[in-house]
Length: 108
Image (cartoon, one colour):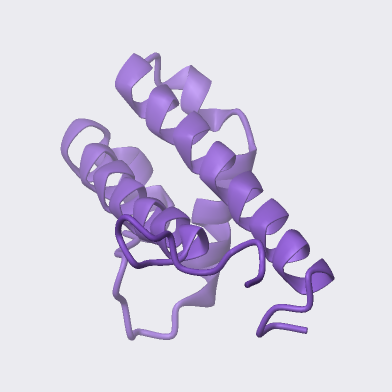
């Protein structure tokens, strides 16, 4: 079994859990921006988790917001915590994918 086979006690891959956590955190982040900082949310292109508008500029703006320090100017500790959680989960996803590939998993 590879390093990321199904966890015996829940039957799912750790990478699935991290990606699910990413999706949940992204929804919370977007909701927080929309409710507490509507002007910033609008400036980011009114991002939504499941948007089929094909608006790549808005997605790029949200990524820049996540990786930059614009969240600090909003002085919102809850928003900052969500941004840092997203950064950690993105990093964990990259690490898990690299390890999966190196172990000869389904992505290699």
